[in-house]
Image (cartoon, rainbow, N blue to C red):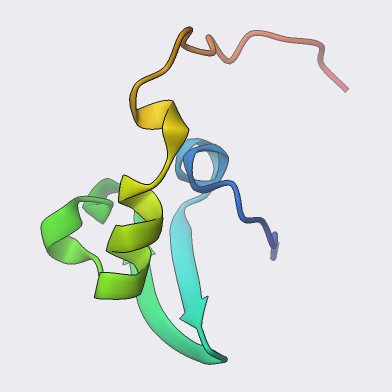
Length: 67
């Protein structure tokens, strides 16, 4: 399944792989376990470090309504 999102934390939680694009080119094609700054391209690293969720007020539990 292909899922397009700008929400990196949500993608990291549910996806097996993350493919990141920058200016129309693939910059990253990594497994979610590899989502560490040293494994990321500079564009993805900047986006990851800009996430306000890195200092969350609350942590989602993943529990919710099932579809």
